[in-house]
Amino acid sequence: MVRRMLSGTALAALVVIAIQTPVSAGPPTRTEASINLTGPHFLSGICGFEILHTGTLHETATTFSDGRTIVHIQVDATLSANRKEAYENANFTVVIDPDTGTLAITGTVVNIHASGEGILVQDLGRIVRDLPTGDMISLAGRWMLPEGDTEEVCAYFADV
Image 1 (cartoon, rainbow, N blue to C red):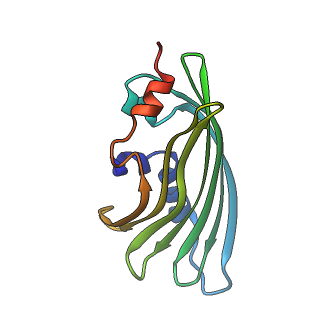
Image 2 (tube, rainbow, N blue to C red; image 1 turned 180 degrees about the horizontal axis):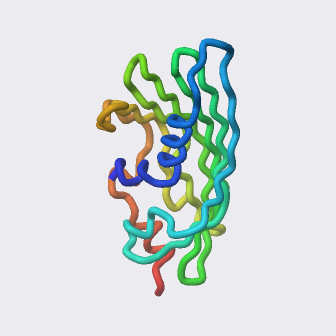
């Protein structure tokens, strides 16, 4: 489940940054980008019906001469299905470290809430993955999606 969650928009953006960011012997290189999030949200596959995602993913990446890259990501989006809306506000940091062979994600990776309902699903803490294989090395924090705790968010968006 974590692999599916992290294989979504945010991880795709990170891979693009890691591939495109040059490594140099000089001072750190900083890049900024905004990615339009329009289309089905990853929860569509989990809930079994389409949940639309509109908004923006903002990222700032800093690459150091040793190849280490630090990416700050902020997501501001609206999710909608069956005439209901919820809001996604994620804010997390990714550290890609070729020396240790790891990718570490720290912060609030998923934070979906609805007016009058409160938090529908929230994943926060720290995930460390092996860079070459993507295998999980460690997981700490509150992780509703990896635990399969999607009943509340799916029920909120369900057509009842």
